[in-house]
Length: 225
Length: 225
Image (cartoon, rainbow over all chains, first blue to last red; front, top):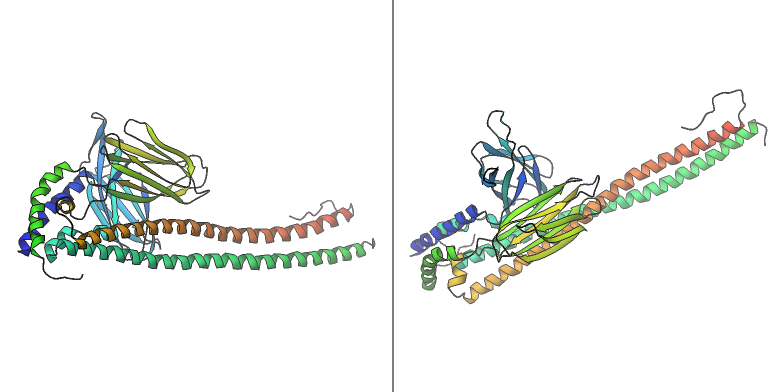
């Protein structure tokens, strides 16, 4: 009974997912030229899976609208982690998705640019990248879970809640570390202000004394005093 | 992943009904909604526009916040498919705007840093279109929810707002930390600079004074440099 139910659920859910992808989901798009790099920053804790669903389009001036890109337009994705190491540097087709998992917490930079892989033919027109980046619990494919583990609707709901709570927990932990870093910066500023003020006062006093002594000996030599 | 007991009979029935009605519903409900939140860098004198296709009658919310850079402000502008300006604000630090799409088409929203000459800004925005897609599209509309399931739904909503608050807190903290780090480097440079200026001026004063009293035999007057 369970298997038939799960299979019965899986198909319409799969259809829904496909429709969502085809319709673009909640994706916005931005206009770019070829080789123009657009970068986005994702501030995430470690161990977060990020999936970017994208599709690219070419502007057709004759029809005055965007058409799906041909196969010779490729998307280059570069992901840098907070320590500026390359996490992902790959070339993808005109539509699909890219994914990466963060190894360390912090600001990750996702840079995209389009390039035509035809020989030396620079595409001069407008291009559009539709982008939808999802992270954390949104990336879990519930259809797969339903089909594989034969869970009921209630189980899946609770699974979703568990994932949400784990995400919150991770964010809190990340927040604690950042607050520590912030506190260190503030304390360093405090120390610097303190020591440099003392140093400057000392320099002031020392140069004052030196000035007086030097001038006194100078005037004595000149027989003015 | 915690595995619970086997499914009760009512769940199987609900699943079957759901499958039959899903195909019909897919054509009736508006397109899948969702939220896209993105952090991007806006260089000085630049303008970045994003486009999104929205169906009529969808309730949308645009929320943005400037995280780093200069006076932490940016110009924002939202236009409907006909080019009418729905929302326009200059030099805002953060704001939230809710509207209902009055017509189908591509809505455009732009962030502009054209008033700034040398600071580039990091801007976060969150564009929510419609409602979040439900976990199982058929279920909420067809069968009544049990107490457990409605409890799950309300927990889910509450956790979503927790995650939302966490995001806002993270942005505020990023802003504060950016200011603190700015202050730290500024204190360092200015302290070193001031100490040097102090030394140079004191030594220079003495030699300048000495030069007033020096004999006219020496043609070059030593000035502190």
